[in-house]
Image (cartoon, rainbow, N blue to C red; front, side):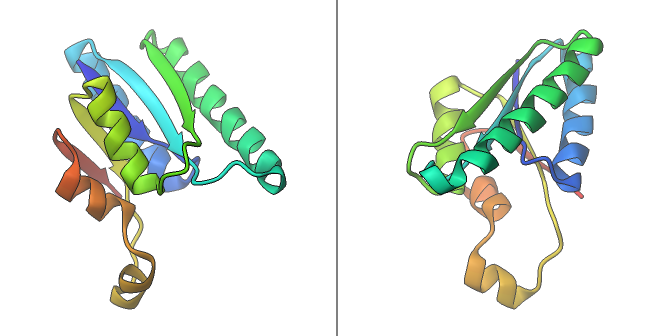
Length: 130
């Protein structure tokens, strides 16, 4: 089984990781920690380094629990929601875990919702965690 965790280092994504760890132990699954950035310009090198550090730190925690894990920082020019769905299809992911934050209706309308896009378009079940 392959479990993808949409990870950005936030508290919500850490909550999703905790649920994914439980599922990985129960189903002897491999965890894919995936972050997506739309661009990778010169100005964003610091953000990219910080995200790589967050991913590696989370991977170390999973290794300590004997859970097989891969980390991927996607910078492929797509919006994060499209990129995450495409990655899940490419890798044959069986389950996606994503942390959610409460947003106003106006906030969702203006900015959209990555979680909503994943729920509607993912090729597998999506677990949302608060």
